[in-house]
Amino acid sequence: MGELRYIGETELQRDLDNLKAVLAGTTVAGAFLPANTPGTIEHWMANEYYKSDEAFLFAITEAMREEYKAIVDDGFLLQIDDPDLPDGWACLPDITLSDYRKYASMRIDALNHALRDIPPEQIRLHVCWGSFHGPHHDDIPLKDIIDLIFGVRAGSYSIEASNPCHEHEWRVFEEVKLPEGATLIPGVVGHCTDFIEHPDLVAERLVRYANLVGRENVLAGTDCGLGTGLDTPRSAGPNSKRSPKAPAAPPRYCGERPSLLQPGGCYAPHGPCNSHNCPGGMRKHSGSFFGLALLRSSGS
Ligand SMILES: [Zn+2]
Image 1 (cartoon, protein in one colour):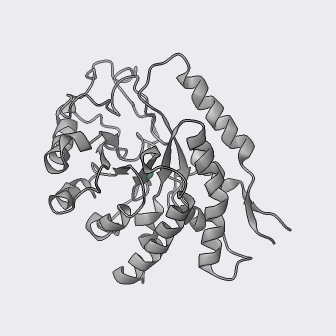
Image 2 (cartoon, rainbow, N blue to C red; image 1 turned 90 degrees about the horizontal axis):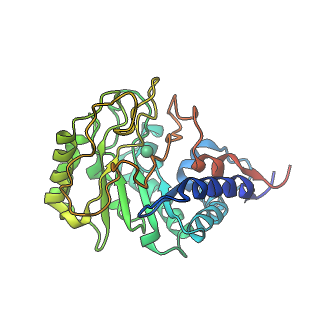
């Protein structure tokens, strides 16, 4: 056993090259590549070398920093996928809320340490409760962690907001303010159903947020990709052959900013959350998974 180091350079470069190839010849407002958080990766790896959880966590952090910087250096927005922040709660069934907040705070400190050289406007944080299909009855409420979420030094925050366990939490923003200059990306299209939500419903969700945080501060997002846990292909847009009568696009209630839902738009769903308790999470591998898979001990 030895110190952790990042060995995913080749696979990361392949992901970056693939994304550039897809974007070639298209006009987009921007594009992102996801990467996992140290806290999420920690769920998947056993510490058999470091003397403390904190030392292990920060070793992961230093290794993943290389991936974070490479994505930004290549001109892409870095999307930090952080199902761990809320989902760690389900891993620790006996922990108190107070202790959980300390647990999560350390993971956020580690993440911020890894992001220290990247401007916040080049960082988007994606937070979800895991895209696995299950009851989600023990999900930690958004109100209990929203300040921690906003403690991550990102320029935009993508948060699940349209599935049956979390749609009601738009009211959190009746009292909570966005960080100065930040953009909120509520998931206004769910990932948990084969139904294609009606555009008026999507618009209603979006307008709720626009009314609370200001329309200039909202960008439409998806809960956790589109249908990442479904057994049948989910229609991801009106161009799908499965939905020939789908509307061209949801109404633009929030000004002229590009919508995540815009046909041919620039933002792809990040793929599955590789949540520790996600039965379908490993079915497909997103780019963010490689950071996890390719962290190896340098010794033997
Ligand atoms: Zn997610």
